[in-house]
Image 1 (cartoon, protein in one colour):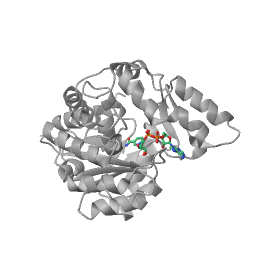
Image 2: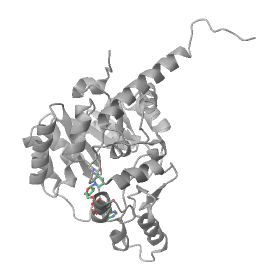
Image 3: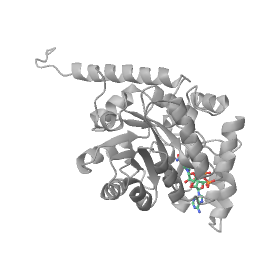
Image 4: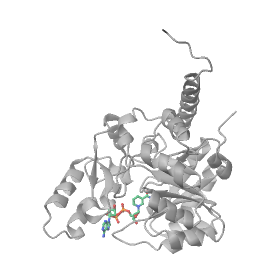
Length: 332
Ligand code: NAD
């Protein structure tokens, strides 16, 4: 008995749960813990300052788990544009078989990775982008609803619509991303036609996530209204934890007369966000969080979390099945 979906089969994992890329969070400690617990752990490539550092992190992760794990490579506007091709080459050289891509113009990187038959999960927030990725030959789509943390895209479509559309239109297996934290969500995603789920924020709130305990506590204390959307003006909308810096950034976005991104940059800088995770001052910089913070109430180990998700999903699927009987009993 166990899950048997296109995702678990293709990736060789026990549970259809992926830990998505997270800047300044996706280190070996977390990826290995998720993979050891039966999901797919993912290292975030650009969290490593250079491609050579990524090579070391991949080797470290391999020493911590015998199970499959992947690497995320995200292509978004950046204050210091990375050499994506060099990161992709390290991924290839180190024998990584699974890559999560995301962001704009992924064509060249996907081509580079597909040339050696890497399994690609491409994350996107619209069906139009998903269809372009299908043409590029990706193996799975990671359909990222408006609930998600970080870069939500510019169309604001929630997962009830996006996942249905993905099932109707794509013809390629997909997983559900954005708004997932438990087994009820996993069962719902499977019911909508997904082959599994992707979680980010939920994994930030685990014992093994290498971020300060005060950030985890802030997530536990928050509710679903405690995020804010910033950078729509520059068509790079991102969902952030609604802390003091996020509010200052929103004010600049609203009030800037020049409209220059340079005015915004000091507030949204990833470097400051990284400090939050290191020193635990949750107002030091911006950091991403999904609306799912309202559903997260504890800080378990990855093993406890994934066992619970499995139990809940099986219970939810059994319950749904029991709601339909061949001979309904009328109360009239
Ligand atoms: P950063 O400090 O370079 O930029 C801060 C924010 O501003 C980011 O959201 C970025 O997309 C945005 N930005 C930068 N220049 C912009 C411009 N000219 N116009 C509009 N928006 C702009 O970002 P960071 O958080 O330090 O991230 C560093 C790298 O990691 C970037 O290349 C980013 O794409 C990538 N990243 C990866 C993930 C992931 O989960 N894999 C998440 C966020 C960022």
